[in-house]
Amino acid sequence: MSEALLEVKNLVKSYSIKGGFFGREVGSVQAVSNVSFSIKKGETLGLVGESGCGKSTLGRTILRLIEPTAGQILFKGNDITKIGSGELRALRRSMQIIFQDPYASLNPRMTIESILTEPLEIHGLYGDRETKRKRVYDLLDMVGLRREAMGRYPHEFSGGQRQRICIARALAVSPEFIICDEPVSALDVSIQAQIINLLQDLQKQLGLTYLFIAHDLKVVEHISNRVAVMYLGKIAEISRGDDLYLNPQHPYTRALLSAIPIPDPTYKKERIVLQGDVPSPLNPPTGCYFHPRCPKAQGKCSVEVPALEPRSNDHFASCFYPGK
Image (cartoon, rainbow, N blue to C red):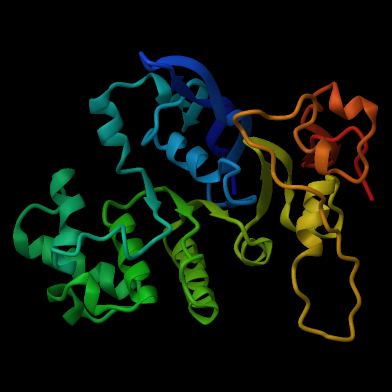
């Protein structure tokens, strides 16, 4: 691992709320609120949080599938929020995404050959048809599918096989950076392990860099070098994976870790049960967003917003009272 391939600085994504007879803007909701982090070349950053916390919105905003409201997205040092559509299209070769649902993200009317050839045609790669067909063969080999699959349709495959096709499509244009948007959450547990192992093998083979989005800390543990925990549009904690699992600093992270099941029935682990529900982003709490559910909250937490500050080497948490 070397220099930062991707840097996100103070990224904000807001949505307008319209109401009234004329549909005027009556407010806004911040799905992503002042988020900053970096990913080094060749590493995997796991992004974890409950449903609705803004993980997928953040991933799509980084690729500019959704336009950011404010902030910077630096890819190889260049701010991609300021480039035009032509430059952005060229950049798509370097930055790809694997979507959550392999059933919905493949066109049911296209053969696998057409699905894998389409990005090559869009970017003008691999010239004639025979060269493209050889590239499709190579992609299918990479993801562990037989070459006979190219003439078949998505409905003829299982969920795990469809996700392998989605991975092959992302690899078609030889990207450097891939956002994996909950790529295993729709799959059986046994298949999840196979897909994660495949992603790790491809990373070693091709030198890929991942942003791996998930809601399951156990899944993220096996693939990530570093882990960022997100809550209500903000980064609550970010650290090396081993340090975060052994020494979590934010109460929300500790609650998530306590919910991971342990296969040994004789092992007793403290279970932290959070009170209440996740606040609505339409009306977020004042001060620290987590304070209404936090067992350690004090008066200061409901008034001031804690900064994401270092707690140890490469370990950051946004909490006034970190530690156990």
